[in-house]
Image (cartoon, rainbow, N blue to C red):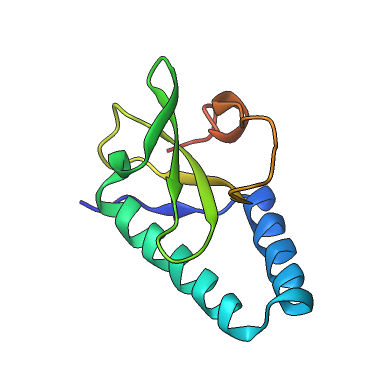
Length: 115
């Protein structure tokens, strides 16, 4: 059963910032590629959450990162391993050259949210 993909606010803000940068510096073709890559990544992760490289395991919570196939961006995502139908949270979307601290799994995974 495919998992539901969730887009928390930080991911949406990251995406919007990347699009704004691309509008000013690269053009519509790059924006279209980024949008397509994010959609493909969401489809892949919905069915195969282990597709990305494991970064951190915090008990049952996993933080992974997936390099997008046709653009230089990385999706960081979090999910609970034990729940085969649990949600996948796309935590951040960053350019591969951006240097940012690693997302903390406990911050991105809503452990106390009703399931």
